[in-house]
Image (spheres, one colour):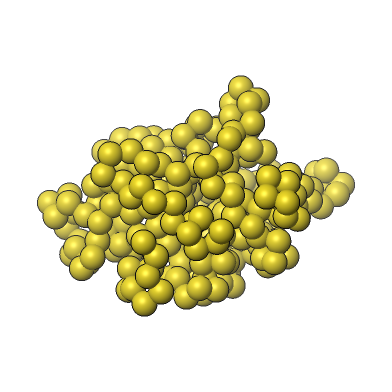
Length: 251
């Protein structure tokens, strides 16, 4: 249950690439920050393939700086596992790095990608996040000290991009969070990823990066008669919390 005075009110958005968090759960992260939650945003990669012009080292530097700036806009901290775009794998090495991150952060609430999404980096990160969330609090799994209160967190899968699975079927969420009041701040955070915004603006001729996110939020908002919303599917497997924490806080 949500406890406004608990030191365990720490949220971790663990996603594949810089800007994924802002697109998929940025409004909800803003709402959590407004309630006093500690916010961490982590990506598996530094976005080394997110360019047509820069080399992989320069674009990685640019994109991690953008991600750090965006997280700071809501008092959050950014982390990167330093995996490679398009090559994220569910393997011992990657899972261990994720477990160590979870150990340091000790999240009580985790957001990650849908288990079925349009690209494999997203699906791999979802599996890594699921694994790390379940086992990070086992004393022997990591050399990092175990923080008091660590345990299996609430885990939510964000919408796949456009709210559709890889076969084009619209995903039915378990939880929908109203972000109408947070939408403009969410878009400001997304705009901090200027390297992606500028490339897409030049390529498409319109500010598609921002407008697509606005459209998707409006479409999900229709589910709750709001101008904007973000949708999630809660993981309720054995040993995970069964109560819908987001619904309790933001109903």
